[in-house]
Image (cartoon, rainbow, N blue to C red; front, top):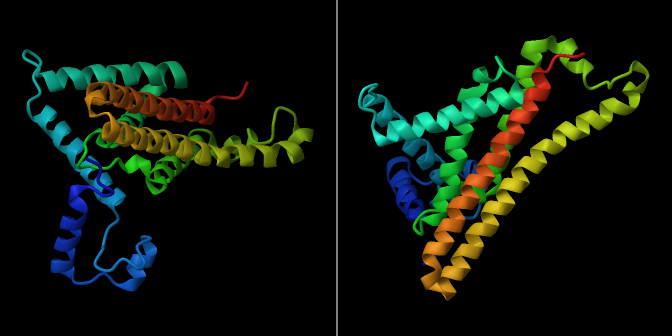
Length: 248
């Protein structure tokens, strides 16, 4: 059964109306809800908030039950995941430098995977099937690696890599590099959105026509959620690597 919105959409908005009254017109214009009376928050924002809550609860539970002698299943899974992310960042960004970026890469991993996974639960909606969420993620990655590059190499040192390998090429290289970096926002956002939206739509259609394919579609959905998460964090790590790389 397909829901255009999650089961929390109307319930949470009704609660907000009861607590805060009708949303102002200016607020609705700002969040893209103009013409929808009684709606404070769009569904993808509610789902993104739910993802944050679920991740926080899982990590709090793992931390509360942390044990060296008798690790829980959740702790072992998280340790395995973090170990893999640490190895990934060390390989891509550089040995001795990648460890510093594990928290950021891990945060992206948890949020994106769980957001993608929501598309497999019929009463939820994947926040990553909305361009507002994916552009927010890609812009966050873009700002992060540029800020890291400036902090590590200094503003002048970081700006030099936009000029190209030889100084006389800088009139050509600077605009190309700027366009290339800005295009990363677009490519990260649209790649994630397109794949998750397409997979979610196809799953809903197939389940409506051939419901006995549920196990197969669930398996493909989980695989797709993992692949799209990996692609996003891998590209982010590559961009960070380029930002902090020393010039030779």
